[in-house]
Every structure is written in C-alpha cells, then in structure tokens.
Length: 464
Image (cartoon, rainbow, N blue to C red; front, side, top):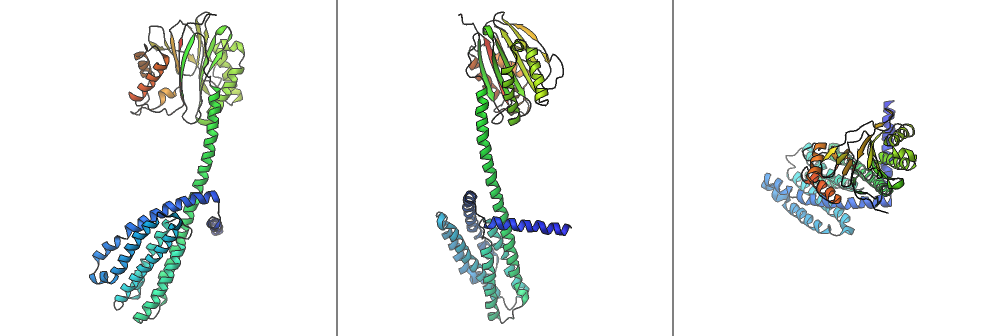
C-alpha cells in the first residue's frame, strides 16, 4: 500500500513538473525572466572568480602537467573576461552563456583528456574514470542557473565530449573500450536529471512567490480601502463649544480596533467615547465599526448616563457579537451644571488636571465589555469641572509598547511627562512634546499595538 502511495506521489510530482517545465504564463514568465537574468549575471561572476582556482591547482601540481594544459587554462581565462562584457546586453546574454560555457567545458574535457593520455602508461581504467567523474561538479554548477535547459544542454554536451574523448583515447593508447569506462556518462546523466529537478523546484518557488506577491498586492489595496473607510468613521474637525481637543491615533497595521467618537447632545452638551477592541487587525476593526453604529443608534436617555451607555454596549457585544470584548470609557459633559459623569469599563484610568494643578488618575470601577459580568457594568464618578481643566484618555497601546530597554513605560512615567509640561498653553504643542519625549527620552519610536489618546481642555463657551 505504501509502495503504491509512493508511486502515485511520484506520478503527481512528475506530471506537475512537466506542466511547470513546458507551461507558459505571461506574468509569471516576466517574473521568471527577471530572476533568470539576475541569476545568470551571478553565474557569470561565479565562473569568472572560480576560474582563478585553476591557477592555484596548477601551482600545486607538476610542471609537466602545467605546461601540458597551460594553453587551455589561458583560453578559459580569456573567455571568462569576454563573457563579462556580454552581461551588458540582455538580448544575447543567455545565448552567450550557453556558447562560452560550452567552449569552456570542451576545453576542460580536452585538458583532462591530454592529462589522461600523458599518463596512459601508468593510469588504470579506474584512474581515467576518476578524472572524468570529477567533472560532474561542473555539471552540477549549472543547476545554479534558473533556465529550464541549464543542466540538460551541458549534460548532453558532457556525454558527447566524453564519448569522443574515449574514442580518441582508445586510438592513442591502444586500449580496448570497456563498459566500465561509461560510468562517467551514467553519472553525467544522473547529475543532469538531479540538476534539472533542482531548477524545476526553484522555478516553482518563484511562481509561488509571484502568486503570493500578487495576493499581497490585492490584500494591500483592500486594506488601503478599508483604512480609508475606517478613517471616515472618526470625527472630522468637530467644533464643540466649551471644549478644545487634540487626538493622536496610530494603528499597528493598516486598520485597528481603537476607536473614539463625540456624542453631540441637546443644549450643547457632549459625550466623549473611547474604546479598545480586543485583538488586532481586520476583526477588531470590524467590531470598532459596529461600535460606531451602536453609539449612533443608542437611545438618547442612555447617552446621559455612562452606566446605561456602557451597559447597552456590553449587552450588544455579548449577544450580537458572541462575547467579543472591549474596554471603554464614556464621559458625559453637562455644560449647564459644569459637571461630568464618567464611566470606565476596564479601560486605563483617565487622567485629570484641574486648572493650576497636576495631572492625576481618576480611580474608577467597572468591568470589561462583552461578558455581562455585572449590572450595572460600571460605577459612575461625578466630577465638577471649570474652564482650564484638562483631561487625557488613552488606550493601553500607549503604555504597553516596549521602549529601548525592553520594558513598557508605566502610568507613573506618563504622568511625569504630562506634569513636567502641564504649563504648555497649547494642547497641540503638549501632544507633540509628549510624543517627542516618549521617543527621545524613553526610546519609544514606534508603538507595537494600536495606540490612541485624546487630550481635551474645558474652554469658555460661545455666548449666543
């Protein structure tokens, strides 16, 4: 049974190899031709460098042999130099390689035959065979190229030249042709088959690379479109009377699961929402998109109470999205009473700086969304605010990305940066200084997770 299975696997490999060897695909062939030219150039450079090995070998052998084959060695060197000039002409480069490598192979065989004839009185049949068998290495070198016939043509050439040299050798040395002398031909044939198999496998690899690159390009275009769609969901230059804000957002990939939104309410009041969907990439971005819809369609009365607002999202995630979880913060700002209601569902603590004071964490209690752990999902915090008060809310990518030291910054270090620069009057300048310090002082050049933060400040309201 296993023998039959092996036979069928070999049959499939043989059929697929034939299809690969003889089939033609315009786009794939274009890619293969590009790599064929590149590898041919490397092959010529290799031949040029390798031929100097001849002189090292000549320096180690007797002067008689050196004088015997010196002419062939010098011609091979000359041909290697000439072949380098053909590398500039792509149209004839491949033909030039076949032509010059054929001549070089013939010269090598001719040199070996001269050595064998020179030592014919002392060499045995096995000695002659060993000289020719050593040339199998030259045939295998041709597998380095990516051309379909890069091993087949030299293989046929090797066998033909070897048979010719045997004929000449038998006449010159008066030896009878023994079947043992044909072992190099069998070895050349096997080497040519192995080399061709290597070429086929490498060509198949390049075709797979081509297909993967094509799929990657399609995926990249789709992700670019998805990024544009997701970017369109975020608030665009919303003006909120009594509030000034700055936003930083960076996705680990094209799209991410961090999302924020402003909820515009009656009488000029506003809600601020930020969420961090579990995971990365497409799935979390899709859930973030659904969050946008849920926030837009949530009952109005829920928008005035963070525990109702977040409780509704908790239920929707658990029921509609099969317990997909997220952390979130919702702030309801009542500009008539100058009071804020805050709910935090498993999110990093918000940071608050009263006018003239220091940034500090607002300790809150709440459970992550999507599991219906408790009801109500959060314990609301009420806070009075006045003009000049500042707040910062952020996702955990800001404090979980590793610095140069390999450790993430802590909330304490984040507070230190903010407090050292709390007197900066412009929020945009504060945001840029904060990012520069994270980069220069802590080595946080790039965030390894979806990262977002909002800095906002209470400002005087426009009088109607």
